[in-house]
Image 1 (cartoon, rainbow, N blue to C red):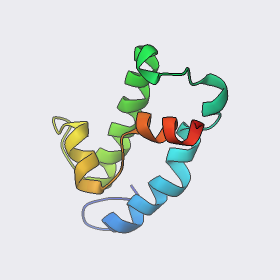
Image 2 (image 1 turned 180 degrees about the vertical axis):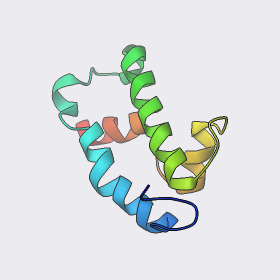
Image 3 (image 1 turned 45 degrees about the vertical axis):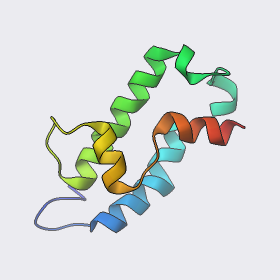
Image 4 (image 1 turned 30 degrees about the horizontal axis):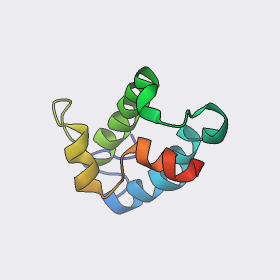
Length: 89
């Protein structure tokens, strides 16, 4: 509801909200639960990517068929696995 197409936050405000409040919650504790390589935890990586995809679709107003990679490029948000690896190191 915050990012409705006719009213609500702009793309920049919604992106800032996601980057400042939601993404850190998703990556919380990355040092303790993130293995050396997130690629080894494929199920976890897929779950986190799916969650980020839902938020990116809400931010941009995109359809469910839009790829997550395209939405990450459109919103200038790095993939969550790269963000977690960066914050864990």
